[in-house]
Image (spheres, rainbow, N blue to C red):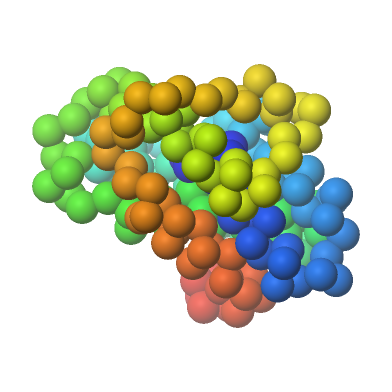
Length: 175
């Protein structure tokens, strides 16, 4: 659920360390889950209780199923996997339980979309993000301060995801 800008920034960081990747296909794969017609299928979501934000976040991405399903010999699929790893890490490890305990799913989404717009300019400039035509509508800047997402923490998240070795991550998580 990181915003498209954060996904593209993380993909850029990953691609700097992996110049052998087919950049265009990898980026297409990175954005594919968020522009798919069936969002739940593209994110390998499990059925869950939408009244519990914590349960919803844990069920949003079944990373293990994705690892089994996608052929990682293709740059497009490696981009999809990076996207899903980002979502999995964001949903399951970014937020402190106390920070989200009393939020409804609707409140959480509202805060996240506000924060994405608030951080977009920072992320775009720092990570030289360019928006593919399919996601130009996500290129939104808002000068308001973010509520939950701190720029330094988002930068650390982007850098950490950019450092992932997909094959190793798949091997460790897919067991």
